[in-house]
View (tube, rainbow, N blue to C red):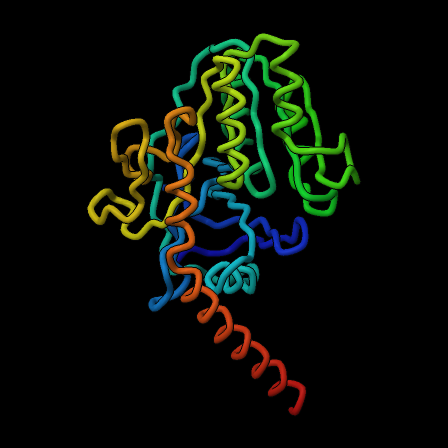
Length: 284
């Protein structure tokens, strides 16, 4: 059992949970991820670390409540526990001096960029962070990203904070004016697809972090397969970071909707159960 230290609201439906996991916290590196299971009958959810403290023996995850399992995760309070925390998994990024690096993050894709940028800056890289969300209420970890960035650009779709537009618009403007050695992006599939198209246009290397459907997370089941160039890769053991210029995003987006009806049904059952619990408490 892994004890919950805190579970803080960052934005509507977005929370930051800190979990006591000394061995994982000691070994996890930037770019790697975890698989979490809350209860014996619960599903296994892959989640990317947002930070780790080897000294405290704690790992931090930022997640969005979009389905039954993440909604259940959101109900946990300090002192509660999750049953399983598997990790670190995946291939960490190679830490060295590249030059000028752009970190491009959208929504809950921003937190996984933080440990990457922190480590890359310690290796002498110049970090430009471009982060965005639909509106200012959904923008998370701005202060943390500012602390590890030489430059920070904020965008919102509606213009409620920073410049109006998408992070890919800001990326294009930057590449038109500046030399960039590497782009790392995490966010919605459509955002990463568009970022990869912009990077390819300017001839800049771009790494994307993929989070496809996943089951065992050890390379045996093949559920998390994705097409990268002419090869089929498994995101759990070959990734989660891949060359964005080679990823078949259209295939990934189609596969991400495979169980949408089942996910909705599960969520409806969860909401009904939660409502019944609330009504029961009110009657008492």
